[in-house]
Image (spheres, rainbow, N blue to C red):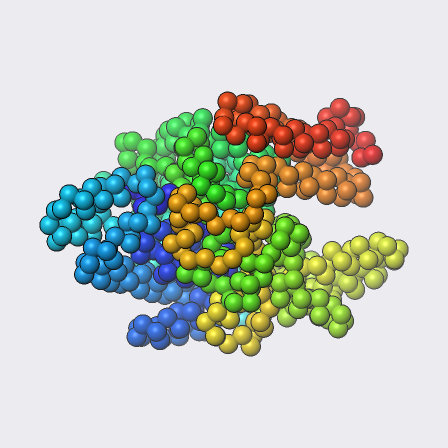
Length: 599
């Protein structure tokens, strides 16, 4: 059955969508759970078991393979409760057509199933027949999961390093693979060959006659080349990628991957032009691999979806992605942080998000992963970090160690936001004999890191009144720049009406088109990269800047051509010209000799 809705709710942080499927799947909405924090998942499982009357048996860290087992147990519970809620929802709505109609009212007006329902409703058919038809055509939303491929910390037992299958991402994959879910696993943050190879061990990822894989693989990618490389790599192992999820490099929430200055529009154009080539070429490799494994190989390529997300804010942008780029689903993330019926955000953070202005939302360097990270100024985790610094205790206690990946000082790894790492790093700086200016620069680089693996999950604990003794009450939140244009909490129905153009909840009149916003963010990022290059010029960084700037200028040329015959031509032309002038005022690297410094 095709998707009920033309949008999905992507993963947000660690805890903000941790139970979103339980809230929205009954309306046919797909959403994604993060599998980073098994400790948090276990605590919410205990809470939901108590609420639902399910038997709870704790999975302690003394249990063998506890991380994978916690993840499986949580996903199985959410799956069971969501199915029960959906069935109860359908049963309850059979009492009156008015209540039953609520499900279909949320659907896009263009949905054939909605039109058919309204046609049957107006035809005066027997109510029982109408409701039976509707029940057969209602679809529950998919309960998908997200695994950050690089968050794959080694684990130990009694000081002995465990085999790689007990690494964090491997264990999360196993937890999902062993669950009862029939849904998708989104792999984000780049390619991890060892993790990808591990998928081969699980039966649910393989096709069978007249049946696509029970569990599907989705790759979050930044460009077509990456999709092709990763799709072929998995196909050689007999694994099919069912969806490529394209995310804006910088106009998104959470971690931001700037690529080489490739803008979202040109990237989507490449997927549009090469979609069938991608599908057929990967299928050819897949069937050969499945034959070598003596497995069933489908004669025709299996279904392939292309989705996109990052900075979408109104119905015109939503439908442009669907219609022009032929996208199957559009991700709406940041705006849903203001929908308590859909996401899990504590009251204080919700108020901060609703009041956030453009200047409050910034691309930070606080992530211990060393990847640019969208953040909200004044979030309580950052305030906690600043207090620690003032008190002469930079860094965080690091109770969970999910991103303890740096091995500069310990074989087991340390998180760069941890108190232990920052103490050792500052000691190292003090021994280098740096000038005051140099020391302050590097000191700030060290101490700006924040404990996101705790902070991004704490909001769920606060929302449900659970104990935060270990974590503390500091919350990190990762909205995209789009948050500046959404100014108040809204209901789920109102947000969906906004997406489909039935209502408008954006009060601001100065919101730029999503493509223009992304372009401006990229230019700001390039300016910062130039400043970094001036400080420490290297040939590698130089070549990166050359390519980055050229790709931005090429992107502007693409948009000019794209919108030349479009109704938005006038609205788009002026800001595109302004951005081009800004870029042309910067050094044109490809016209200089290699090794020249920025001037």
